[in-house]
Image 1 (cartoon, rainbow, N blue to C red):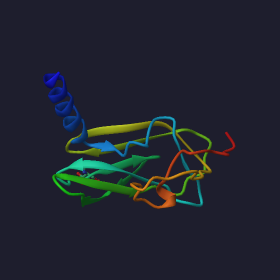
Image 2: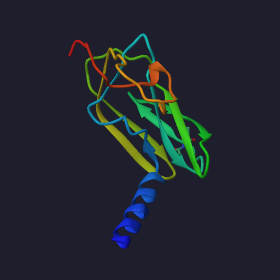
Image 3: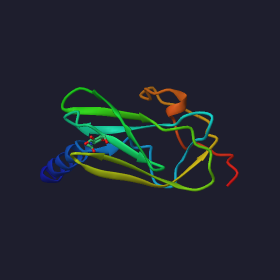
Image 4: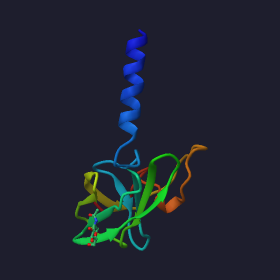
Length: 132
Ligand SMILES: *[C@@H]1O[C@H](CO)[C@@H](O)[C@H](O)[C@H]1NC(C)=O
């Protein structure tokens, strides 16, 4: 029982310390469409530089320390209003991560938690009224 718990803790900390998108970003999600500019953010170890590739543009993310060895990266995407799905790729020395099939529509926030430290335009995928 103790061994299982230790393994679980090791697994959890290993899974957290990685280059990743914030956990509410995922494939097939909807981001706020133009005229708003959607933000995309996540975590990277040691404040490594992060580039976002989106719709043939490369955007350098802003990387800031978040306590410990982990840092937060954030990038603002160009205002987008298109019916085609996009792929968003984030690249750092720690690898490449991808969000596939991302759509742009209207997004509303329906609820929140006390640990949500971001502003409304950064929130994603609660509901959409896009034309798709
Ligand atoms: C990010 O993009 C810049 C400019 O294109 C490039 O010099 C740099 O090597 C890139 N960094 C990563 C981690 O991909």
